[in-house]
Length: 215
Image (cartoon, rainbow, N blue to C red; front, side):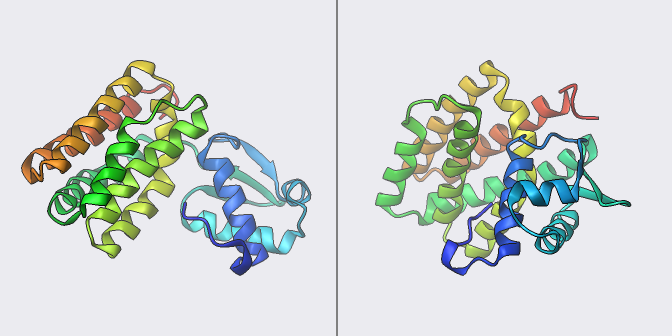
């Protein structure tokens, strides 16, 4: 989720960002129930901005609003993750291929650095680091519409990505794949980088599909 600068955020936007963050990083667990008034008190706001934020989150399929001021965090779904990754399997390789053609040398240096940096110690930091690597490639494509669309997809896929982060072997493989992707970008090898990115995204999908928490 792309943060909104503090000086321009409304209270509703700030509440939206915080609740979305708690959902996406697993603080609010999939399928869990909550009371809107209790959540508003925890956030230090009135019920009005919370309800407005929750309506936005409901439109994004992250929460379900129920009667009696109850909300539930949307459960993880095999159908949803397949739909999300079906789009990413098309767009991520395309963005990487465009980056191979259009990225500036200094941008490639930054992507190399992101691929080579030390593994973060916390799950939240690993989630952030993974997203920063992919976002750098999206921006390097030179297509802002494509980058914005993929950013929005990440807002919905982050909580599935958390499941992959629990698998240490997958994470080690993912780090190696990042380095190979960065090297292919450096070589301006569009066909190779598209293939590597497709395999990279598909590997996460296969892992998540088999996870017991996804029904």
